[in-house]
Length: 297
Ligand code: 13P
Image (tube, rainbow, N blue to C red; front, side, top):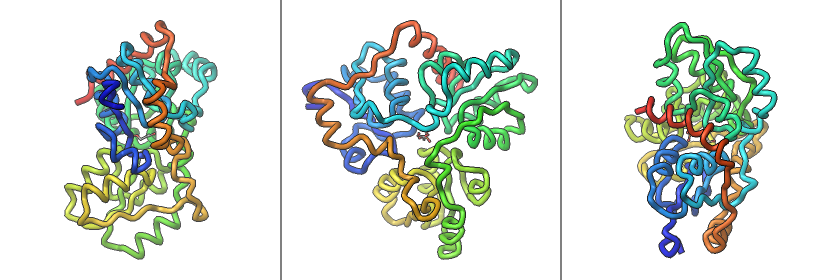
């Protein structure tokens, strides 16, 4: 069916293993956006969450973009409502607005520049030192960018629910049990957990770090979906998942998990549900994404 429809299946690292196993490409937010922009497939099936599929449509509007479950949202995107953000921006008119890609098209359209976790530091470093910056919506990523650039950012008070749900005591217990293991963490985690990490980076950078490191064990502080690729690509190494607060499994993203293999099959069969964006909004949201792509390696 993928061949019949001339479709490409793009999957984020946080998707279910069986979806990752049949995807044409698995990647982080930046890599998937680039691939969506460049593809000549007629149909892009985006196995990820809504803002990712929406970004694909913004970048490549002549393609049909499908999301297996339209309810696959993002707590970070939800933490930044359009009107409240517009009011916040108006209070700081001298600030350049940098928004994380985990936002709606309406927030992107109000932004000067988009970033992902893999290029946020690199982009901020390129801005003039005296340029005030408003950064939204992830305060944890924002603080990490501040620490890596020495810049002060005006932060929107948003966060990713699942990255805030990792247990610090669970991480410390794993470290005590496996003292030789390196801790690798996503910058959406809270500062107290990032302080315990040997390496911090986007999903693809965590994977690249584990591959390049001499260590053979890693404690992974991000959505556990990525463990599937880590274990497949690096079978000689061991990966431990950090538990959620009070031992919950609340660090598995419920939105990412809404996509299933069956829903993927159904969406290819029915050519729906589709992502549609009103054209003037799309054009406004496109500008800061194109600026990001031009500024990042
Ligand atoms: P990256 O894959 O770009 O690290 O982002 C992860 C994420 O925020 C998914 O919501």
